[in-house]
Amino acid sequence: MPPKSSSKSTKTKATPKKKSKNTDMDQIHALEKQLAQRDAEIARLLAENLMLVKDKELRAAELQVINNIGQTLTEGLDLQSTLEYVADRLRDVLRVKI
Image (cartoon, rainbow, N blue to C red; front, side, top):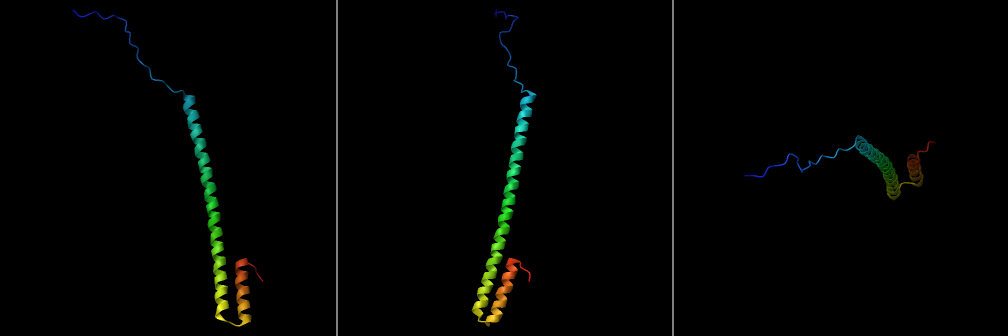
């Protein structure tokens, strides 16, 4: 005959741990703060890149003017025409109006 089981169970069921709502909200706020910081860093980098691109474009335009002046000098035009050309190009680069 099988042994009788007792009416009291010696096994206890493990209850799942519940996170507090405050802990979840704290984690959400921390993640939101991290995202905001990353967004700010991305915006800063984009602005810096834009500034660098504009600077490179300006330098390229300046080098093109210097190249054009050099070509004009090697063409052997008369001195007056050469000086006028150089002065015009420098005014363009320096954005000077006369």
